[in-house]
Amino acid sequence: MSSAIAVIDFETTGMTPTQGARATEVAIVLLEQGRVVDRFQSLMQTGAWVSPFITDLTGITNEMLRTAPPAAEVMCDAARFVGSAPMVAHNAAFDSKFWQAELELAGEPATQPFACTVLLSRRIYQQAPSHSLGNLARYLQLPSTGRAHRALADAEMAAALLARMQQDLCARHALPWPEHALLMQLQRCTKAKVNGWLLEQAGQSLLASQAGF
DNA sequence: TGCCAGGCCCTCTTTAGGGCCTT
Image (cartoon, rainbow, N blue to C red):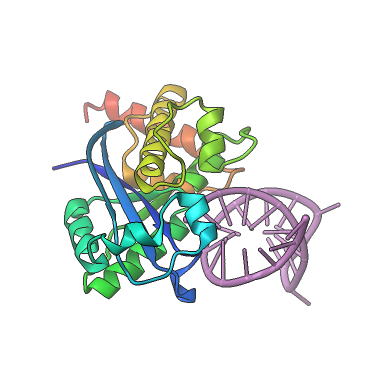
């Protein structure tokens, strides 16, 4: 059984699909044991207009989208690529909404659970001056992945951040390689409770290893 | 310059307000 986690990033025309914003680009990287094992990336054509502000931010133009494949086709391919893998995004509240909205328009179900690297990093790196993706990358000295605010570069950066968090959890708290379910539990802890919870998890892990599991 | 949305979190809180994060 695969233990892959799908790290996703959308570029969009605005902040929320409830206000009519549409996706312009999606990228997904599959992470296994801290390593990227596969990638998916595509611009997508929805007919939505890209404002100059968004073009300045992302580099994505209306001209680029005119020749992009239809959004429904891209989203069906993306859903096949992800399969049943659990998903992770930086500020998952944002990307999960576009994942659900674009898949619904494509007639595909969206059933994957999401974990959020913003919530996780606020717990694991409480001293970081900022938990934006770019600032965390600088704080942790993660290697550059390309132009910020393009989907693949940001998905790769979020994946590198997730891998770093998994590595640090293993090293600091004697945890086994943290699976998605463990990360989901961790992001539900409050900042105040997170260290106690990690100690509890490490203790359970130690007991399990001693019992031969 | 600050606002625009939505959700989550923190705290000088919980009958609330403000900050952060995403495009």
